[in-house]
Amino acid sequence: MKILKIFWKSLKEQARDPVTLGLSLIIGPFFVLLYWLMIPSGSTTYDVLVQNLDTGPQGREAITLLERLAYPSGDPLLDVISVNDQTRAEDLLKDRDAEVLLIIPENFTQSLQAASLGEILNPAEITLIGDLTNPYYAVGAVMVGSVIDEFVQLYTGETRSIQFNEISLGGSAGRSEFDLYIPGILIISVVMLVFIVSMTITGEVEAGTLRRLQMTPMKASELLIGISLPTILLGVVSLLLTLFVAIMLGFSSQGSIWAAVLVGGITAIAVVGIGLIVAAFSKSVSQAFIIANFPLIFFMFFSGAVFPIPRIILFQIAGFNISLYDVLPPTHAVMALNKILTLGAGLADVMYEITFLLVLSLVYYFIGIWLFQRQQTL
Image (tube, rainbow, N blue to C red; front, side):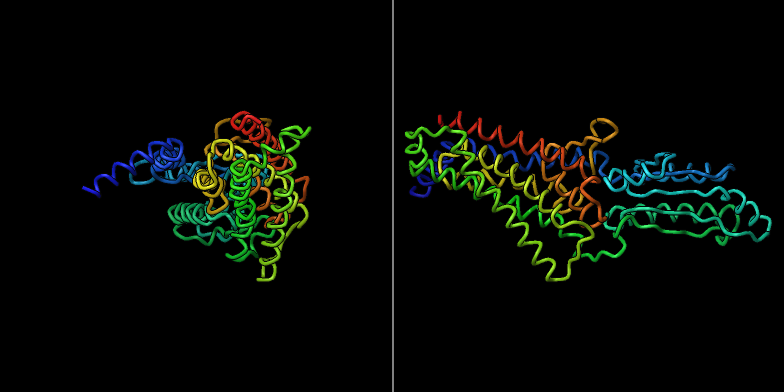
């Protein structure tokens, strides 16, 4: 009987906190929905860019075989996209909007026809280009290479008429597995500050500190900005400390460290904004801790910080693909750091990511200030 009374008491206490209860119940189903959106067919499709320079029919036939490659369910394994501009194609690879660039040379048909007649010519050079730090590249490149090999074998009876040339983007060829994780870890070191922001501000509300400060001529926005600035500085320090430890353990950056610090600082603004939003809906420090876990999960697992995820392209703006997870500031931060630290990109090369990151960070920050003022009646 006592157990039953405690059971009902606990149920009533949980019902008194509908925000935490609701978030706890919907997070699992929401993750299932997001993963279904990422992989609607249940299997990954790899984007392959093809630049066909061949003047004969065999190049087109090889592309047709690539397009026909499918899972047993009939879903395509490869999404083959024809391109004419190699520079633009490489930009898509850097943005991870595609996994592999296949270049079929001008003499592809000529070499295959000569080989089928027993003649010996210089082999056609099939070029595969990609970011070797992208885990999807290895799978896509192997499948493309296997299809081309099979096509040549069927047509000529041997594979000496072609040779493969793999070109890595930036410094991706020389990166260790340890190096691949560092850009994401750097962003996580900043994102973790969402706990400090939300719990610190909620603690100030609980202690009545903010209420006492309200009695001064200070404006509410000045108060919140003053609280936010040390956290943004802490985010930069956290990133520098994490990067320092990584370098001591063997990590080497291909690009500017200060460009990476700039990205971390802008990301910290977004994290502070999210912390303010969490604090706006938190009645206690413990509740702030629980609620802060939910944006943390999204920032970690759906930004590419922990592991790469397929992009769900919604539309294009000025030639740039806009995906579902682009509403998360860390998505652009991780992309920018991958380009800077792995591919050796400069600030000009990541200006799109930095601009998008800055705009989103300011939006989250000012929404956080507005919500906190509204909910806490500052």
